Length: 315
Image 1 (cartoon, rainbow, N blue to C red):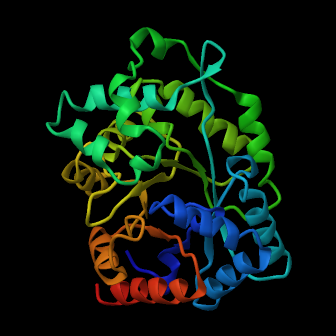
Image 2: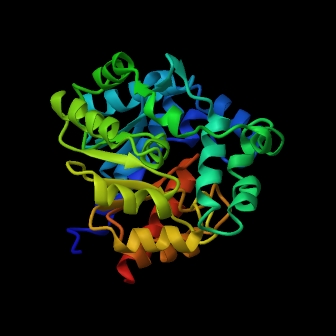
């Protein structure tokens, strides 16, 4: 793969700016206070653009309390003529019998299916420090009932909500529309008809392409490569610690290497647990098409993106 410049593969992440650190509740609270201010967000966006970054993540306004402000900042940045393309993420509103699916039951389903093929999956999922930010993770997951084949056939999507979320981005420069990590559930359930329907809805609204967010790359990517057409690729965690890389780090790495689709790495720093130099040397060994980097300060933007640029130059 040849880039016009290293920054072509770098994407500014949005999680810290909407108050999510993957480190502690205290740091989340600090981010929420810090970024309850458009200028604090804009300083980070401008710092990334000044380094040559031309892509940014975003999310639907109803995804978190700070998401509307973040989208407002991006919109103003575009309106002022600063060049940046967006990769917005919208959740997939999966329903069962007209109700939203339960997150713990969804993860119990992953665990049940994956541990048939890979030993140690249960403990990896229970111990993952990012997943443990969910309230009651280790207590509730083991007692949650997985969905079954009968449930899979009754799944549907709230198309009205999908349309509402897409509408938020129709007048913005969108590079790809990302569909959320509920993708894993639909792929494991074999509901490629619903995933195909999502691709159609996105394209019908005039967006150029679709990426799917996956956290179970070792299972989801091979299945989707075999069963689904018409989409651009995947966003998936890729970091030296293997956090959020399921069912195993090795299986996820193999899937990333073998797919012919685009891959954008997310969580390269494992929620601040890996030094930037180590993180990006690891990520760009895979020749991924992009890497999404969330930053909580201008200093972090400079440190992290410069480390990523150096890693790309050394390849």
